[in-house]
Length: 74
Image (cartoon, rainbow, N blue to C red; front, side, top):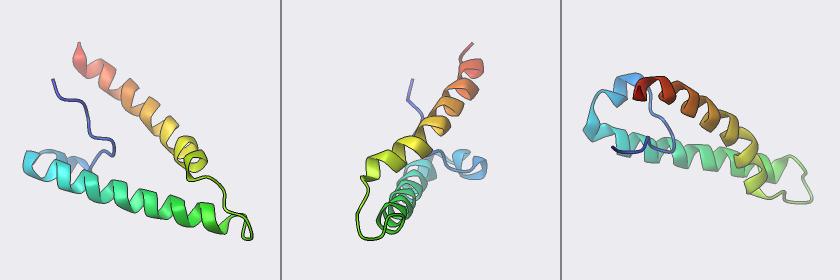
């Protein structure tokens, strides 16, 4: 069984297996660029670690993803 991609693509893309990986890569790159911009501009003279923002934004999504996938495994 394959694990879900780190960034879940929209359901219309997920139906086409050839597009799941490229779309996941693109969404992950866009997410990291936006989080990097946020970490650089939130506290302007200082830079905050990007890991703080990825954890704060990614952990709730990951927990939601686990909960939604747990019913599908049964």
